[in-house]
Image (cartoon, rainbow, N blue to C red):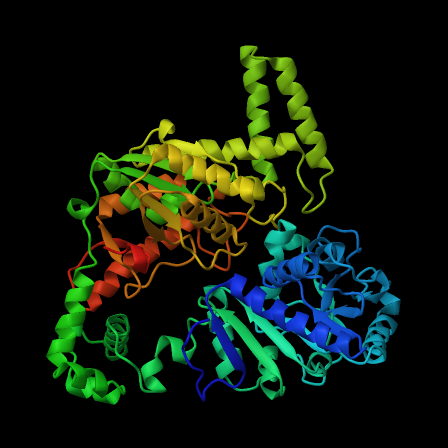
Length: 620
């Protein structure tokens, strides 16, 4: 658990922990304590449960406790927060399916004690259905502990902006942002239901204890709004400020904008470490619009940073210290490795060029031996219309050239037959999954060839955890780690690049890093240096970056050209996140913005810049 203390600005008790796994352990531990306490007293336990990616770690830990510690759920009754409407319970998109796959099938809970809103109820019976749901909660004695996630609009359950504090369980119309966030699960926003049945705010607040969870930097802004902002009907999570026993569990990414994290010197006395000094002075320069070397005593005093100047005797000393620290991060081609074995792990078949296309080109010119390992096929991120286009190409080629025409036509017909009757989000047949995988592989090879590498530099690992055919993946297992370790043993790299992104919407980056970390920990001998890069969503702040790699206008153009080779992801990618821009546009903006910030701070002016973090234990 991180040590930053809570502040008076925080109106909900908030625990900041290192990662999603620790959140899972803490919340599962609290649930287990509650079940055991009440069971010992001969009382049942009533849990309110949530769905989505955030609570999965909680459910995995509860399953582990059931299997290895004997935690029993026979005296537990559960009520789920919500369900899409209309939604048959057997649908792969239903929260019924989610809960049974991710929890109930793996514990000893009695089926009769599981309650999930009936998304298949006839429209004319909805009022009766939601009233009965409320009555069932009351009859069970009320909810002892309610688990919540938080949406980008601040919704809890499906209580969208405008939900009142007294709102009961009801049917609601989903917000545009909510439907867009769910689009990836349904393989298109047009397939996301427009309505849902949800517990109301009043129902949630009636729980005796509430645990609300948030992970990832994409939740940072709404976490701060919920915790530090005023109570507001437009942000349902702010109503939790008035609950007497609520705890907000957040990881480092989700906590990134809390005042105690981003500007702790504004709320309390701080110890001015080297890292905090750099962060504070860069913040001050941006607040004042002044280059670092021009900051004055008055600037420091006005922004509650006089103690920093006192520690170093003068503003000029502090300014020079931070200016030099930032300058030392800049690494042009001459300061990058030469003649080394380098292994770049790319979670999807485009993360390499999106995130580090510039440095890949420089490292190639420096005559390093480079392997790019694509960890997953990325096949679910290929549109069906691309598959139709490619099988049509194969059919035409076979017809015109007489190349195995019969086999090609059989494949093409099987693909077309399936796609003609495919339901939204339905798992593709094996043939289509293979076509989509091959599309991504061919694009990946073309991408690295653009920056100077060859097809022989690419490895396609196809880790098993990804091969579900669905957006939700299996946990990382021994087979995944073994594949990664075998590659590490074969390459024996001096330097390894790893995606360290905390905002990947579906967790593939995080899971791939988990496999790499475990594989590195299992190996004997000298550990390679690890550099972390960011994915398509954000860049490392200059204050966090260990190394800043400048790119010329020509190098940035080459990087964008490599991104263009991923045609299946261009124009409108299936999983774009919350950003409407194409991946190349995000890259261009973030690389230019990083360089522009350094220019603003008074350092050398560059056209564009990539950022990398070396974990502290491995920094030079």
